[in-house]
Image (tube, rainbow, N blue to C red; front, side, top):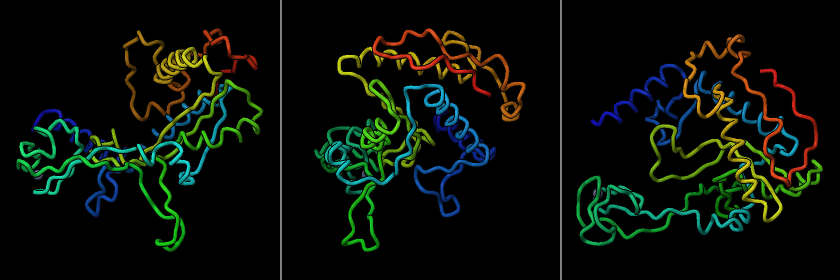
Length: 290
Ligand SMILES: [Zn+2]
């Protein structure tokens, strides 16, 4: 077994023993690429979400929060192009019945041709030509499946933001440029999920969509890239990207107020290079309590 697989196994096993991440439905053999967060895992996840929300929504005047429902009108996904285009090309092996992405690097040759070789059973010429497979989870709204409307579990949270744009704009009295942030579950019927929790079929997203005047988008993109990278380093307890001295801490440390209130917190930049289209609305925000 390659050493990397071995490390991954150890990591998964350690995460389970310490109560961070469990395999979903493990007593029934587990459900592929779905994971449950244990007592410590859920706290870690909650902390990350809270800090992201604080820096993104509470510390800013130009971003509003939103919690849209997972189920949306099917026309939303038609309009966004997800029904037609959110697809992966897949090939099946007629011999061992395994299914792969057409661009799976383990496949030798071109799928559909007699020379193509299945990466699992090694048979030649058993791979079908690529077929498109939609990554959205389909379900039915209403008690009787036959007459009920087809709805999808959202594959991303952004559409909930887009369809509520006007509601938020009007109710929060915002003007462009402003953003809408959301944290929520999304679902993708991945055929080749990644290792452990790195690409899962059910996952949580933290996302902010920022609406700007046409022509200022590149300027804002640069601003947000810099802003989010420095915030991530600040939350990780590092002063800057240049600082590579990671602070070692245990789970117990994070509950220790002395550590929590230590000097690792860097206040938000008050004279950051905001794009010219940004209108300052209020005084700089006070230091948060954590
Ligand atoms: Zn095969």
